[in-house]
Image (cartoon, rainbow, N blue to C red; front, side, top):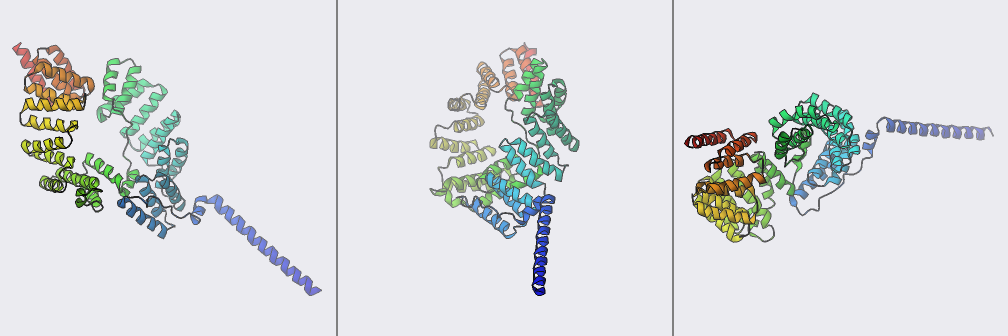
Amino acid sequence: MLNEVKDINVRQREILHLRLRMTGLVILLTTLALAACSKLDSYFIDEPIAAGIDSRDKDVTEYLQKMLQSARAMQKSGLVRGRLGMAYDVNGLRDAALVTYQQAESLDPDDFRWPYFRARLIAEYGEYEQALEILSRALAIDADYAPAWLLQGTWLLELGRTDASGIAFDQAFNLEASAAATLGRARVMLARGQHQQATELLEPLATATKHPYVYRKLGEALRVLGRTEAARDAMVRGKDAVAPSWPDERWDQRSAHIRGYASYEQVQQLFSSGQVQEALVILERLQRYHPQEACGGEDEFFLACNLLNSISIAYDRSGFPSRALETVQQGLAINAEFIPFHFTIANLYSHQLDFEKALLHIERAIELNPSRGYAYEQKGKMLFGLTRYEAAKVAFETALRLQPEKPENLFYLGLTDIELKNWADAVQRFERVIRLDPGFALGHVFLARTLGEVGRLEEAWRVQDDARRFGADPSELRETEIRLRELEANR
């Protein structure tokens, strides 16, 4: 009997001990969950998701497979998971990027980039409240990154929360007195109805940046203040306004992962910013997947030919015109019916002032596609360079029929009329140019000159003032002024 009681006591102690252990484990897990939820999540993080690996673009699939393999091999690395997210992001796989950035943040909650990138993606869908909530986590990690405050100010302004937006833009300005921060502060003032204060910020900013969006906002403020003429000029300069972007070093880190079709767009951006060597590296990488021999085939010819043509342009802009010419000649030898080759080689010949050879290729491009206005525009320029003004006029008029009211064609027609001494026709051309593009400074310059030649000197001087106001080149203004004074003296 005593032994049985003893056994029962032993079993009760064991059960009690087990209960205490289980209770301690529950308390421990609860404490961990409350104290470091994101770190706990990292122990149970999902497998990296696979996306884009079935794309037909080998440049994309091979790169994503490599990044995915690294993420699977190092499942606890927030950096590797975040890089996979960047690869998804810049190659158009935004849903996969959102999930992967969230995983990266769980694995490494101290890296500013993962909530920052995720917030930016969510804001692109117009979900500003959620984006702001996630952005606040990034700012808690690094409150000294000015572009993040600019984003916060912009999103708050979209939500109509002007006071909070003003605080964010002030913080951005205190960290970095940039044009973007100044513009943000001015936008807050406009939203509050403080048009005079906004104008005091926007006028010097417009002069410094020449940005159409700044002019548009300045025009809005000036119109409310009753400064009608100045508002009109500002709105003319702001007619093509789009919201400006600003330098963002961390956001730009994603571009290292661009592959496939997105690389073509990146090349164009690099060309525009003068980063030709970087563009050439990308083009040569892409050519591994679309070799020049494929330019003569039926399936992949478009990509292969475009790459070859872009490489020629890159060589030319890098200061290697002979390599550029050799490359485009190779392209023509493979596919003589690819029209961009003819435009590129014509441009190279025109740089050498060999307009006859250039003209032959432009005419061949017209034979291949006689309905393309750009080809006639280029033909007109070549003929103009050869001083064959009557033929150039016919080419520009043809281009204008195919591209109605294109200011550039009208402008060149006006120049041709000047060479032919058709002053009245030239005046009409340049007047139409100004109506179509009121901010075209050089159009104002030549309208002033031609008005002077037909004896309308008072109007010519007024247009000359417009040309100066719209930022015409000082040498052009000086040449026009000299001619107008000669005409006044002769009169």
